[in-house]
Image (cartoon, rainbow, N blue to C red; front, side):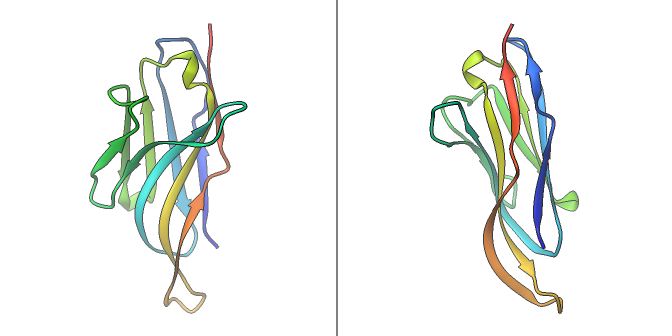
Length: 125
């Protein structure tokens, strides 16, 4: 069983910084791309940043230059460092991973997309 567990959300003042982490655990064979999405109240979930298995990162225009995504493949963990936060960054942040699990017998299993439970980030004075 695979799960993604996020940590690091909270309340921060405008202009401040906050870091999120997301650890994938369970019977994992390979992790391909990883990413972060967010959903503000009354809005659809939107993609914010992504990183490939070899570390190539991409960002939505709304966060480019302020957010940095990274990953530690040895720890099956991705990170999101958020700087110069704005009130409009307030949202529930979800991590995402495209990965292949292993079967109970240890063989390569299916490849699927997994999501974290979400962590609240509030930017307010």
